[in-house]
Length: 181
Image 1 (tube, rainbow, N blue to C red):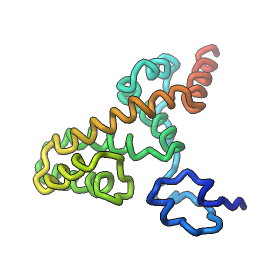
Image 2 (image 1 turned 90 degrees about the vertical axis):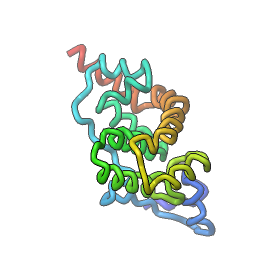
Image 3 (image 1 turned 180 degrees about the horizontal axis):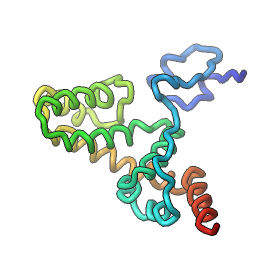
């Protein structure tokens, strides 16, 4: 068993506050909730598909296996809520039924937007407040600004690190080996 000290852990500020004054912590992932678990690839991507992901974040996100690979990387960086939110918004915009739209809007708000939400995304106060004010009468574009902010964060910050990560480099290497067989 390994004991970790709170200052050695890469935690979000709200989690650091919970551990303040603790001497040692044993970190156990919550597998039943799906938190911090790896997601399996839906279909093994080809070498060409994997190389295509390096052209743009759009090409990465347009491919299901690319989404999974990126999410696994973001999980290691403790920021998987970004892609989870972005994907939830993509699904949300496809909803046609107003009743289902309202129900899904509340779920997204509770999970990602609300202060102290379980997977709270990092957006500015004004955007958060505007969503909170309009949540009772949602539209298909209710989360557009927040989604654009998160997309920008992923594109400018997370995506370049993903391309340099062992996650991506191993995918490329394994795909090259498979292609040569």
